[in-house]
Image (cartoon, rainbow, N blue to C red; front, side, top):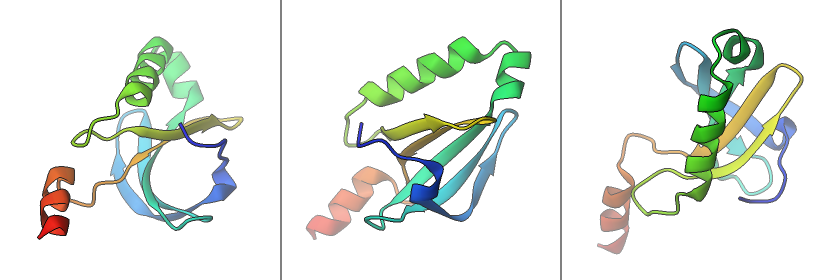
Length: 104
C-alpha cells in the first residue's frame, strides 16, 4: 500500500456507484493527479448488519492482490463515520485492454 492518505488528499470527480452499505466515487489524488475508485462505507451500517468481518476480509484480499487484470488496494483510512478505501479505477475499459491499446 502507498503512503498514508487522508480524505483531503483526494478530490471527488463523481459518484460511480451506490450499494447497500457504501458509495463509490471516482476521485483524483491531489498530489499526483491519479484517478482512483474510493469506496466509502458507513461504519454504523456495517456494525448494525454485522458486516465488520466481511469488510476486513475484503480489505485484506484487495491489499494482497497485485495482478495486472484485477483492481488492487492503494490506500485505506477511516474517519469518525466512515471507512474509506481507494482502489484502481477502471473507467469502463478493462485493464488488460488498456495494456493492449498502449502497446500499439
